[in-house]
Structures are given as structure tokens and as C-alpha cells.
Amino acid sequence: MALSTVAQIIADVRVLLQDTIAPYRYTDDELVIALNVTLLDTRRIRPDLFLGDGTTTNFDDPAPFTAVNTDEVDIENGFRPAIVFGVVGHALWRDQEDIQDNRASAFIDMYNKKLLGLN
Image (cartoon, rainbow, N blue to C red; front, side, top):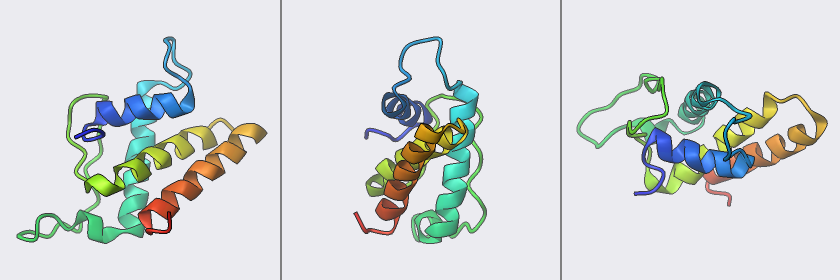
């Protein structure tokens, strides 16, 4: 499944950030932090996405990722694009430029709408 690992999500994020040629503007570490923050925010907005398979319930925050690798991102398939939009928005917000702020807000808006089923 596409967007199922940290590496796949970060690769898609780089395309949306127009940051696909090394040296990158956004480091791997910065994007992994953005992924972790996005997952924490997702946990706040949609805790039901973290309930597990029905046999166990884990109300703890998602374990943070530490590197761009093949670790599985355990989120329902339909919400993976929202996670990508959230990571892009977080990365753009860190730039603190007027143009980037507008793009960041647009991506965060898409993230929220997809999580809430409004888009």
C-alpha cells in the first residue's frame, strides 16, 4: 500500500514541498519531526483512528518515529493523504515566510477537512 511507511510518506511530502533534489531544503530529521507532530495532532482530533484492531485499545500517544525508514505508519488507508498534508503544512509553517504561511494554511486546512470527512 502506498504511503504505508515513513519513507513513502516523506517521499510524497518532498514532492508537495518541491524538495526532491539533494541537498534538500528540509532535512529528514525536520520532516520526521513534522510527521510525529502531525500524528499527535491526528490523535487529538481523531482518537478513534488509534483504537487498534478491536481486540486491544491503546489510548497512548503514537510512538515517535526517529528516521526515514521502512517503519510502518499505523493509520487507516483512507487517512494517509491527510497525514501527508499535515506534514507538509507543518514543514511550511516552520519557514516563517509570508508566501509559505499561505501555503501552510492551505495544507493544514486540507489535512483537517480530510480527517473530519469534509473533503
